Image 1 (tube, rainbow, N blue to C red):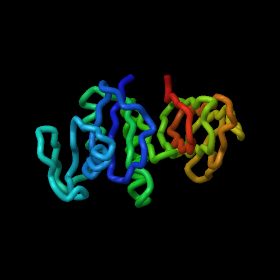
Image 2: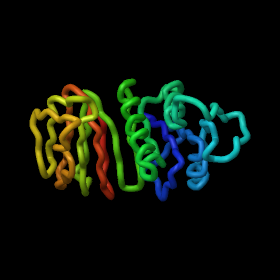
Image 3: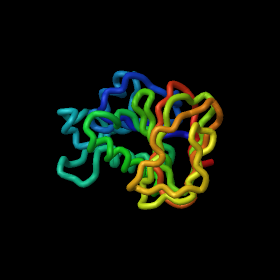
Image 4: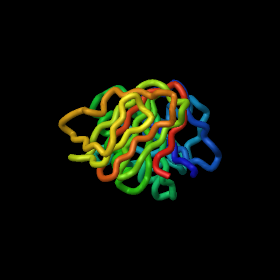
Length: 212
């Protein structure tokens, strides 16, 4: 499935994916600097451009007022949905201000609520939100993984192939039971039957598949 790549304003030191011609690239405001740094030409440049400091020239500019309810990243996601994409990878959206990081996780939840998938990437750190679904990691994954309830209750949570396993567990927003797990060199799966999970992992290498 072709992906929509959105670039936010936080500096990106490397790309963890191969971007194909059929993929859609969108720069969100100051994320234009990240696309330029990697020689990427975004099909759309979206935002209010308060962070960039100027409005770029071109027919691919989608400008919004500074005083608005949506973040520039949400606006970029909507463009991706309108272009027919459902699989999003968002760079330059983690780290920095804590409120911006939380907003990025809510953006991933927004995508999941609309039937899509979104993975936030910051070098070797990844995050996503899954709803009534699962995510599978290849045996190449190493490092740590944490799973948090992102709805009041996440029911039927099962974690396999990790150092600490769960079977049909209920996670809540008031107790971090799923924090600081580890990959073991085996294929691993996190599944939630009913509810929403935020999944955050750190790995130097390894593939993942959401749903499917």
